[in-house]
Amino acid sequence: AECVDFYKVLGISRKANQKEIKKAYRQKSLELHPDKNPEEGAAEKFAEVARAYEVLSDEEKKRVYDQRGEEGLKQHEQMQGQGGGFGGGDPFGSMFEHMFNGFGNQRGRGHGEQKTPDVRMPLRLTLQQLYVGVNLEVEYLREVLCVNWEDCTRNSNDCQGPGIKVQRQQLAPGFVQQVQIRDDRCVSRGKMWRDGCRACPNGKTEPEKIEVPVEIPAGTRHGEDFAFQGITDEKPGMMAGDLHFVVVEIAHSAYSRDGDNLYTTVEIPLVDALTGFKRTLTHLDNKKFVVTVNGVTECDHIMRVPGKGMPRRNGNGYGDLYVKFEVDFPDELTETQKTAIREILGEDDNDEL
Picture 1 (cartoon, helix red, strand yellow):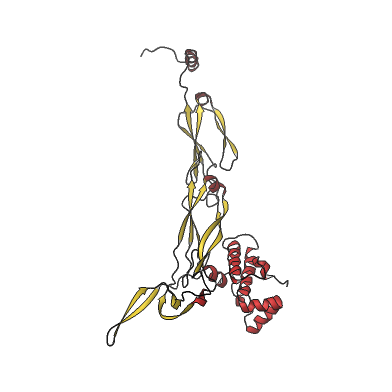
Picture 2 (spheres, rainbow, N blue to C red; picture 1 turned 90 degrees about the vertical axis):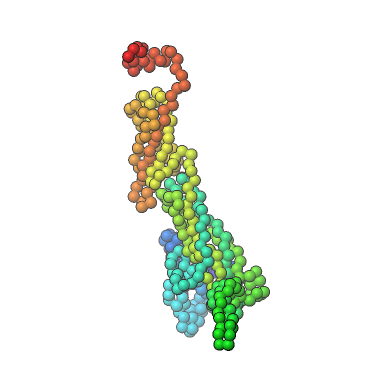
């Protein structure tokens, strides 16, 4: 089998440090995760990315790989009884759960583990974008754990979880009261943060900017929620919360929407209302279509145009377009025009009842 260059897989140089390796893995995972990327071959590429990170994030494996290449690494892992590739397990499981705590799926949830707050962000989209569908790369700034954060903790029996410390008070001989107090130095059960730790000079977390791929299908509606699990702020001892993009529809100048149907208003002159007409309209995808009326059009008449509404979310065709016609009456008529209209419509000039 052809050997794979793990550094090229992650798009980094051989001098990359652990922070750069971790950042590259996060970005590649977001791009290629099968839950978010339906393209053919994405799953295989993701598996390569996961394997590359497994090796390069482990100092021992990285050292062997740098010295002896992939074949040498496989021999080393066989001697260690690992077999490589997450011990033959699911590459979409352990590594991605560790990095993103279940991004795009429900793995790793439960067991009473705390998580950081969810974040809801409005995603403002035009009616045109909702009509044709669009793929977006949304920039999101979050806090991620310092790469070496575990080196900055010490054992503490008083810590009962993130931010929770148990304080014992002796009330009387043989009587001890336990009180829970807030202590942000507690990062998990039995672990306390060491202030001033050189391994993380900027504290427990640091800012990271990521690009989140959001696929908006044609026909998406106002208020729809697109959730990405486990990619909000990270904190020691806690799972990252979920990021929610909530669609906010931007009003259109010509069309309005109700469910799968569209509505628009067209102004026509009186002569067209009486004699019939054709109108060329431009749809949301900039394609032209013609509306034809042969008879007399009453003021505020509404015409249904089948199949010219929004795409249905289930992929089963389109809704309808409803066109309201407003008749533009002239401000005034000359006597000659009045006489001609009476003659045409067969009205005489008799005011008697």
